[in-house]
Length: 431
Image (cartoon, rainbow, N blue to C red):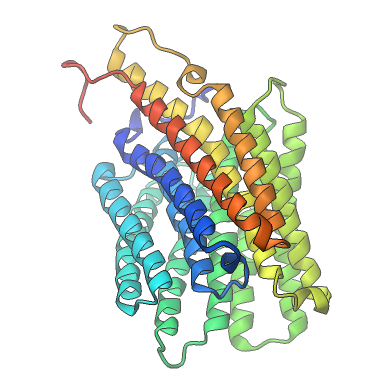
């Protein structure tokens, strides 16, 4: 089902988003390999260099990678806002993101100041390129009042804030004066997860959940209010930390953030229960897992503001991070890939074939069986990783092996889909 409002003729060259999609699974493999190598040390404390390295393999290497590729496609197709010089933007962003991610991970593992400095510069180029290109594209977007376009603009703002806070964290780690590590880290995590990852997922969900999962539309009032309320609360929370407001104000704002996340998750689950087409769909299962984990993150985070023993438990950040990244973000991103990639390849195959080749359907490009196997691997990997938080010696390395298998399976599936594209012909227009 393709809504008539989609501007398919404005889609970027296939190579622009696909380079991100094909690179991303390799970072899941790398994250699993690091977990196998380091074992329980990864799950000892969030401050361990190996833990920070693993976190950024997932957040920058996998999640941001897929999100950048999706943005290049979503902006022109859904928002009517094509990215100018999409191929050049994709190349620069892809190089900067990957060089910066690899240097950052190596800098953490080797305790190398110069690598961390290089990482900050490379990520500023890669992420900054996408922020600037996306912001300029959205300035030309039609339907300026739509919930998706408003959400995308807010998400890009959050990405810029996350990038600046990340750079300040690097300087703090290197011993810069007047930079407090703990408040900076809290703000970096909040803007990165709630502002960038959750904000972008919500904005895109307004379009892709009804379109691909054949659900009713999100309530109009939720679309108008949720993301502006989320970002306003997030900004107030950051300011409250800087102003040193009373703990009660911080608790109130934290609980409002949790309420916003729960509202989106519960609404999405309700819409999925009222799908107009009850055919089994792996994407729906990925999203259901993600929404349940998002509810878990919100409830656990809110509970920690009221229960001092829970808040002081050193395992709490690791539990929240596992639910937020592996349970929510990786699941959502994986589910989106199984809709976006087959559709993109099918669409570009149409343009190349021009009636000379009988085209396969999207379910032939990526089979439901391949997607189901990925879901099974993801569920087993996530369950073992969650268990490893409480029995790290016995489960951390098996969890790493399974995450390696999950990333390898996804890479195999996506590379196979890319190879199914018909070759360029002499009459195929070059874009």
